[in-house]
Image 1: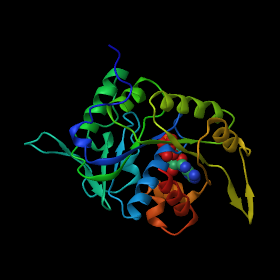
Image 2: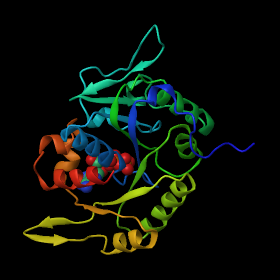
Image 3: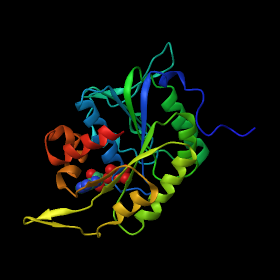
Length: 257
Ligand code: ADP
């Protein structure tokens, strides 16, 4: 018989997690991890209990973007479950904390490892688990969405021409899985110089995309040196500057997930 498209048996470790938010993109380098981590810390800043699962096996970003004291995952010897590390109260799991460096694995193996790590972690009680999805919309992503019941998806893209096709792919994947896409984040949209706003990749494609696919929210994230510097420096921008305009954008995203 065909496998159900959406997980019907919620893994034990995720049973007390109220919302699982997938942050997804079709390509690498568009700012997916930046959005995932800042969204997580923004939700935490609003008082929610939050976890982040960095599902990117090939290029885990979480260890660069946050600075937990403990940079390795611990295993509970008795229950054989993984104990997340923590930074500023947010629970964190990443392959980058698994101590093996960047992995060389084939697709099916990657799926197995992701699913194992996600479903044997002692997440405890969480209001939100933010999943930083591996880039793309292939088998690895599909399997992940089948193993855990994703509540909502946020799609990250950049304003270039191909963005439209990318978002279409993402929306199609999630709609097949009956997961609502609640927002598109158009990252690196504009920058300001000498008091003027510039749109280096053009304007308007985000609006077109959300209208076409009926996505209820569009967020424009500016190109901001501090966003990249704080990410590379181990402290999310919304933590560094919790009252800035970037923090405001993330709190708006947090409200819609
Ligand atoms: P992805 O997860 O899609 O591969 P990342 O979030 O790792 O992308 O971002 C790629 C690089 O771009 C990182 O160095 C990040 O700090 C930087 N970056 C992402 N978004 C912005 C932005 N809006 N302004 C400036 N730098 C950004």
